[in-house]
Length: 494
Image 1 (tube, one colour):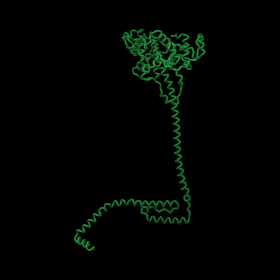
Image 2 (image 1 turned 180 degrees about the vertical axis):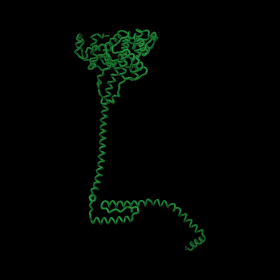
Image 3 (image 1 turned 90 degrees about the vertical axis):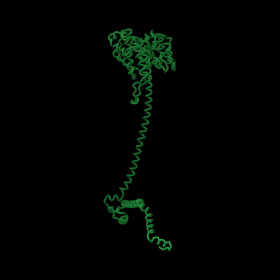
Image 4 (image 1 turned 120 degrees about the vertical axis):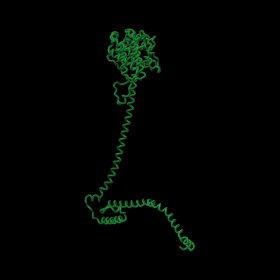
């Protein structure tokens, strides 16, 4: 295996990742940001070939050194750095399609999607010092150096650099709808991560107590990492806080009391299965990293960083997919808004058409009323003028005689109407129509009452045959009745 200090090896790393660490990624300096990218592109052609002969850890260390020196930001710096080794010319990195090459770091099987989270052995006789089956040796020392490459930060929560495919500070046109799309890990995976981190911290506490504070193990009779829960370890360390502080590291940016508090939260969330946001989960894991640094357990630190590195890679991928989904949603909402605007216009046109039709009917009614109000006779009447026309007088006299004859023929109900002065023109026509309607109403009432009259005398008509039969019987049976009948029948005289 090539050494990470070898210039030839660094050149291979540069060629493999030249097209990956471009733009914003070329400004990365922290190892925690580099590891997820290496994991994400592990099946990329040049990266896959490099990982077949080199561990992922050595590649990350070399990348961190190259990034700090700005090799990926300026090709001139790369030429100057590798100028003392002219046998290797820096060609453009070939574009090779993704190949499903198995890498020992991550298993592709869906049934074991988190095989890197294997729990430590819980048997008392064989409590190992490693969690993922990694044998102690030079790899452990390299992991400690890898942790030292990270630039110290005062924040207890480090943000994952945004993916280049997702625009930063993107303001959606539909904030209410898109705000409901949140990236989060499923509860099953989240609980899996917290449970594994709890087990790693319990192992780190056991190793620390075994080396620096063995009296805790003797008093508690803990002989295996599984024997002591994380919250119990925190309680024991708090009881001996002075001795604990004298035997631990004090990394910048982490407080012992806060790390203890977060450790109990990790155990609480893992046991009670509470669903957390990715930001809250990252805060818990970052403080777990701080506790590992305080305890000085590089192996546990590497395990936790590895777990969160893979989780960050998946979260970054989900954020990228979320950005694409938001764009699709906004496009669909734009189409719906356009159709809604068309429907609003159609609705407004329909309402305007209805008003137009009603206004047309208003105009017709106004014309009819205007004809009546502008009639010559109506105008003269309104002006107080009356025409003395002989023809109109004769028409009035004939109308008067006709009305008197109709009054004589109409019933009393129609005659109770008071006398009105003779009218001319349209009023005369209206009066005649009214008289005709009264006459028709009288005839209609008479015909309507006739069936009622027939129904009333129906019973009397039914009794008439019986009455006649009774009279005939009385006449026949009376004295002299039979003789009269025989004389009628015989002589034909009544």
